[in-house]
Length: 134
Image 1 (cartoon, rainbow, N blue to C red):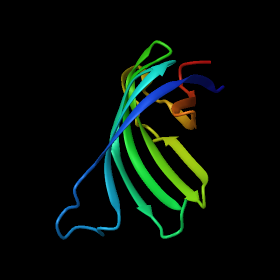
Image 2 (cartoon, helix red, strand yellow):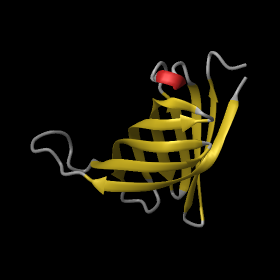
Image 3 (cartoon, one colour):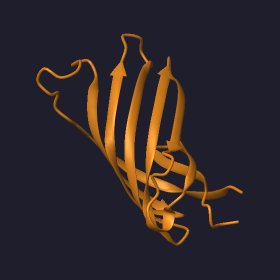
């Protein structure tokens, strides 16, 4: 049975310098830091790779993020895998909890995270399950 956690978060993204001779300079790299509020209280830290295109409103990104905090009273951490595209302004995003990435009170967590942005406010909806919860 799926459980649900909702709230908001602030995000800070910091451009990271390209590494000499490694990768493609047209692929941008960012450090991400999030502060979660609501049913999930904690932080998220990770790395994002992004590519823009000559077409206005089209781009893509991938990211890996470690979330540490408390979800409905259970403390631990888990990893999120992001895959997003923007096609001429239309977004498509998939954020999945990495299997077997949960620690401590969140060990065994599985599920996905949805993100919405309205009026400059980032909100999340975490749909998850834990093996020892009905």
